[in-house]
Image (cartoon, rainbow, N blue to C red; front, top):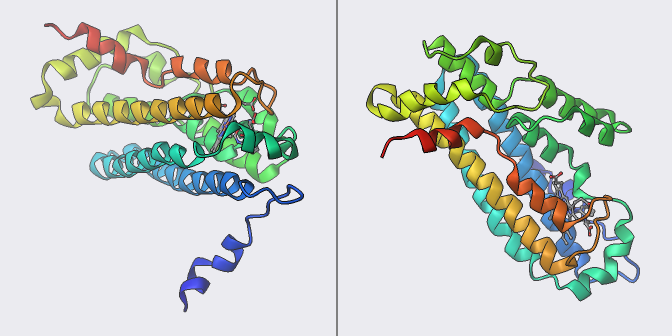
Length: 263
Ligand code: HEM
Ligand SMILES: N[C@@H](CC(=O)c1ccccc1NC=O)C(=O)O
């Protein structure tokens, strides 16, 4: 066994193939920025899937450890935007044309992460129609209960009063706000001492969402500084589309409960 053999470095390091001619100096940065993100997303998915399985088995402590690792990866990914921000608008404009209609919309791992965190949208499967392996990954995430679904089911098994329509919901559909979950969380936040596991998990989920939003925000800001208000290669309005995503929330009841805390 050798270092390069174990890590399959020949494969990994042969996978950066700029297509601009003459080759643009900055295209390698663009490729590596995306590839490192995809590598980390692979681990994020692996950890989130395991966290779901562990919750299903009522094994909360190791599930929280997976979530803790995901939070560190998210911080790395958010910090990593500063490398790409060294790409100036003039430099990017010199090779943007070679990207054609390719865009982050087509990141199947990103979509699977969004779905696993509960932002489901079956229409997104269309993007991956021509790619059976990608479709399978995204479909699996669409059809599985989200991390939030698993947490709420765990709470129900532990005796918390989770409404039946939440537990029986069609998990392939986007999450919608459930008013009657707020009192359940309010009781947990009113007495952390006697609800510690639930309380801690709620806060871990809020951390996940917070970190996800920070990544989205840095993506938006990097996009603004590199392409301004140009439309996206994927056909969206560009920055306005990415700005709207900042309104999304995975766990709306965990934010709503904050308003209900007396004081
Ligand atoms: C010069 C750098 C970048 C620019 C100008 C840019 C621009 C955009 C734009 C305009 C969109 C909206 C879709 C479209 O119409 O194309 C988008 C989506 C997306 N981008 Fe980027 N992006 C950049 C870098 C990155 C990087 C490094 C990643 C990391 C993988 C990334 C991941 C994504 C993802 C996942 C989406 C889909 C977001 C969603 O559906 O909510 N982007 N990007
Ligand atoms: N949507 C970007 C292009 C872009 O960023 C991109 C192109 C090809 C592969 C990945 C990309 N990254 C994220 O959107 C743009 O409109 O310039």
